[in-house]
Image 1 (cartoon, helix red, strand yellow):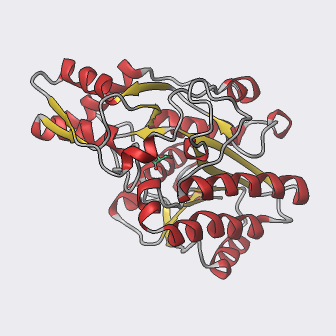
Image 2 (cartoon, helix red, strand yellow):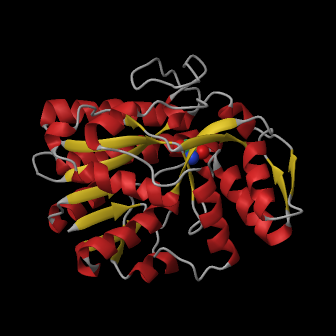
Amino acid sequence: MILVTGAAGQLGSDLVAALVGLHGREAVLATDLRTCDQMARSGADMATLDVTDPDAVQTMIQDGAFEQVYHLAGILSARGEKQPDLCWTVNVDGLKNVLNAVRGTKTRVFWPSSIAVFGPDTQRHRTPQVTVTNPTTMYGVAKASGEMMCDYYARKYGVDVRSVRYPGIISYGVPPGGGTTDFAVDMFVQAVKNGQYTCFVRESTRLPMMYGPDAVKAALDLMAAAPSSISVRTSYNLTAFSFSAEELAAAIESRVPGFVCEYEPDFRQAIADTWPEVIDDSRAREDWGWHPDYDITAMVNDMLSHLVDPANSHV
Ligand code: SER
């Protein structure tokens, strides 16, 4: 059995569908604070789970005899700045509850970290795997702390926990909520709907990004890798491509003629300004064979084909 927390979210909904495709409906238990239509569509078993409740997490994981847990429940960066206490509780205490619940078992855990672990002191171009982090958002502080906790639980208790530092994830299913890289998804949706988008970061803002199917593939590949191939127990740098907001707008405009993007940066600009522009993910490529399937052109074409005609679904 495989447990997924945060299954109603942007990544969780696509990952659950992929896991059901690989292992069958009975093999996957999709959980979130509330169940929803998107979770139901995958056909997986569903349950409610509040990851901040240690007893609930312990009971679920003990009772379930799970081989794998994909612990995705989390609060993203922009919402984290509005609700820093909640961000810490969900992102750090929630992770600790999961790690404690699997201690002494053979359960393998996947937990997403983020490019947000990096901060203004970090080298922004080809950011190395091991480097100064010093994040300045609560989301980044929580992810950096979580990474160290994963490494600690792996060394001290032998917990087989694996993690990647996701860049911005672009996908057409469940929209992201409360993130800084959400502008990339919003831009697609508004281009198709209205032919116009007002972007909340300035045009020159360049960030590492990845298409949703590659984000799912990374989680599945890392979890399938032999334990001996995993040399990083904090979290692996991971990327597919980087673009500026205006480069994405131009790529969309070439497929959606007449699309107009305007720029009105808000508080999320300050968050984006502290993150890397381009990440070096060579350790993930060497250790467990990471490589993205989608470059920016393939991503733009696929996104637009699904948004214009939702029948073209992967799932
Ligand atoms: N996509 C996330 C965010 O913008 C970063 O990991 O918050």
